[in-house]
Length: 118
Length: 118
Image 1 (cartoon, rainbow over the protein chains, first blue to last red):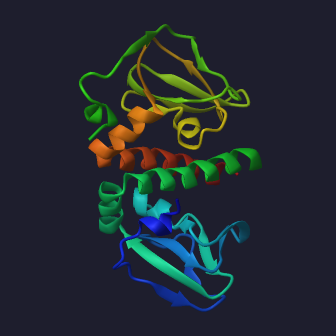
Image 2: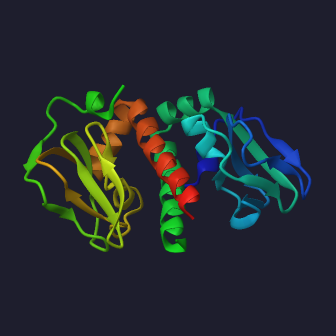
């Protein structure tokens, strides 16, 4: 099961061209994005740390802990993104507990990769 | 609100003495632990990366992604721990969506710390 399958049918979708900065490290957060189609590069201090593809999410950290953006996100290709704010995020957890589990898996995978990178 | 407040009343509690290895890096996982009382040291490659206190959790990564233990956990003091397996973890998310949010916050905080440490 993918996170896309768990999004409600009335989900807003935003199309962006390649090379667009979705957010910049240090910015205030507030939205997580689900990649419906396309590829998004995530950069930490200018270094590529991940390319997020269809069914993946990015920007979840600033949503979860209300901190500033921990990384910069730039579209690598034309993308379809579904923005999720905190209210919708909480609604999704209540409506689809599997959504919470999938987001936690993303966070755990990133943590493991960071462990290896140190 | 603390994760302890969200645990059901029938939660099992395990008491362990100081200096006990709860699990070792590389072991198969399966249980997350909520610290009810006491302090637990989390070590990565023998280096202390965090001391988890009352209301905190550890061991959640191996539970979430079914991978091996990413770190070693040793009690620093006498501890009361509540072990949570995947079934109870999923039940908690369904029953208390706030629990999912609190666990995600733990993961996000760890990721931010790792970013800074790199």
